Amino acid sequence: MERLIDIVQRLNQTFEIKSYGKDPAFSRFIPQVYDGKMDWKAKFEPAFSELFNGLMIKGKSEVKSVFLAVFPTEDVLETFIQEGEPGDLLFMHHPLLMECGDPKGNWGRGFVPIKESLIDRIREKGLSIYTCHVPLDYHRTLGTSQAIAEAMNVNITDRFIHDEKHGDIGIIGEVTETNTDELIHRMEEIFDLPYVDFEGRKRKIRKVAVVAGCGDKTAWMKEAEGKGVDAYISGEIHCHIDNEYGRKRYEEVIRYAGDTKMSLIGVSHSASEYLVHKTLMKSWFEREFEFSRIRLIPQEKWWL
Image (cartoon, rainbow, N blue to C red; front, side, top):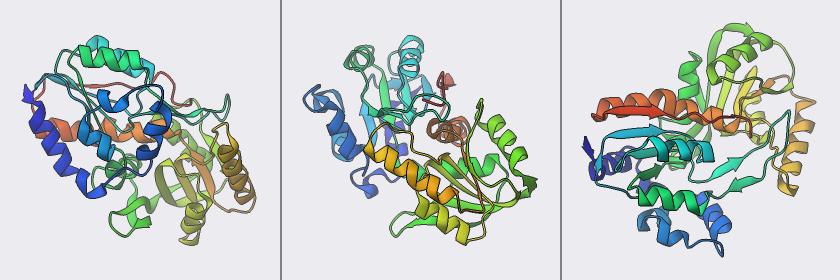
């Protein structure tokens, strides 16, 4: 059993939570989805309500088990509530569900709030939630893109999508020569997917770019192609959010895909970011602490 205060302190230090300031995405989207519907500042920890990373819900002080997930879907939270004992901790990448849409199904709604009833049940049971968004994406050894590169056995030669303060979120490197169809099959195996999202050309592949999460930015794709990349792998190569913003982004990628020589492969936003929990973060928690168990909670559907 471990003390919650020690776990939170170690996570805050490892990911340098305070150095990032307010999370650029969730400092906007959490107020947007909750204001006028729920007093979210009364439900979440004061420090989280300032930074939008870190300990979000504080439960009992002693932690027996840690649960790992990427998005707070209803199935993930129900599993946590049912299996977790008072004091147990759920570590996630996102504090909100992001419905990104299904390339072979319905388009998504974008950011979706957690139901107040689920938040209340978590609080009443004395469970804790810690989320880490941008600091996890940028972390040099525990990052979301880093986990993908390691699972693919990428020989990292370069990094891109640079931030002056925090570094790079994209990875470029070499793989054993393959082709697009073989690489797609490999991605379906790594991410446990029924299918990927694909655009661009099918070709021989020696050099790849990896961007976890929302990689559907043509400027990033062009930067990778300019560095000689054969395949661009991301959580999303298309935005399938059902609004004006999503449709605009979708059309931009369609136009670019008609000209690119790269293979563009999307493995779903959630699956691309779940991998770091399954691999690097699980190993980190095992090294740093002694828990009764570490429980991975995959989503029922990766494309949603």
